[in-house]
Length: 504
Image (cartoon, rainbow, N blue to C red; front, side, top):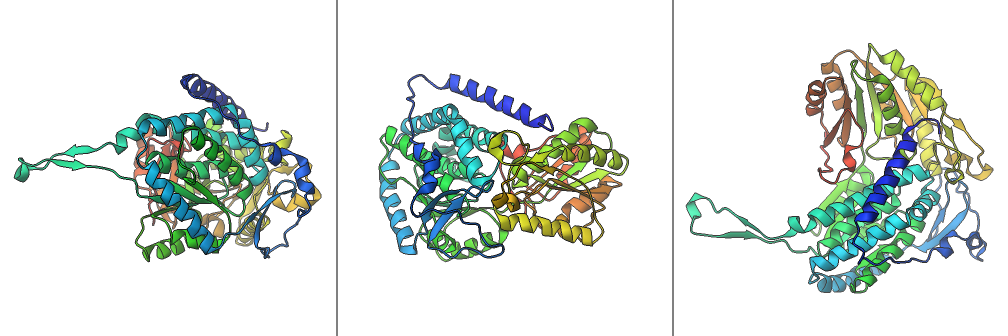
């Protein structure tokens, strides 16, 4: 590998999974989920399958959602684009099942989680491979972003979930000392989720886990760009629910395009959305018609701030991982790098050395550091952002290299790219890139970098690095974002803290 972070991540993931597997009670049964039909090459020879190369800039007009491997453009499968009436039927079935599940015990719900956890730990390679094939990410990226995060969510629910849902007795204040106040928590009903493609396993499981443990049902619309993996992961959920005697139809996976998602928003009791700000605004407007609660996660443009008193060799390694996790297709990834002028030149040269050593290629070959971009249109958009920056005076300081790419899929790969001489008139410093681009800008003072970091309409997270922790915390406390990592990256993966956003 070109840099040591992936090896550390993989080793840590393996060690953590072995520990978690050891802690699962022996009474938790193992389960098997048939994956033969999704892994066999013969699946591509079905009568209705073909290798379809999307025309650039044109969306396919079809009644079906068709899925292809970004890294090879091999056909994976097709799924129905559900009509609004079909969506309402799915929600109605889930609603009936939820009435039964709402009466389930926490013991039964915990058993569901333990069965899932055991399956994930025993079959993580399969889960990662399916995610890799559908989205183009490497197995290392899948292990970190899919397995570790989902297992952490499950273990947190096992340890803390019931505590948060138990009734609470609260003080009535001095004026009502003779009274008693009790707060009780009840399921909402059917939770709808419209999730993005970048982490197909985690994005399906994340809303489902909390919904089911809270006594709700869940109807999840998977992205049209990752429906193949989402539908397989649904099998895992179904099998675990069956094992604990849950009612049929408690969880649904639905596929389709915008019309399908719109129908879901108007049919459920709460909606969760992971995606772009533009679509998020439309969902909030649609949800206002029925006054249902909404939870939105709308991407970010996280600042990565490096002061002059840092351990530079370590920070450049973290910077590379922060920008390139899942080929940069990471909502909490680092997208704007601000480096103190005293170490700017050295930082850039060290980062460029790492980036130039990275090779991009088919993720399952095991020979490359970075995989594919999920969609051709997105790869083109990334190049447009680079072109805009160069046209306005930026320079490409270094790029990674391509490995052996198939002719049909070459447009799905984008090399990691370092940009210098950037400024805030450039789109790359203002718009979410969602790709492996590192624009690096120098700053002279803490006040200047705070102003620059806050010059953004996004407010997801940030990372601040300094040899003086108090200084780093002081800088982070003045940034307009939901969470901050101090001398680290990816604090957002912790279930113990709020995954929050501050909109600017």
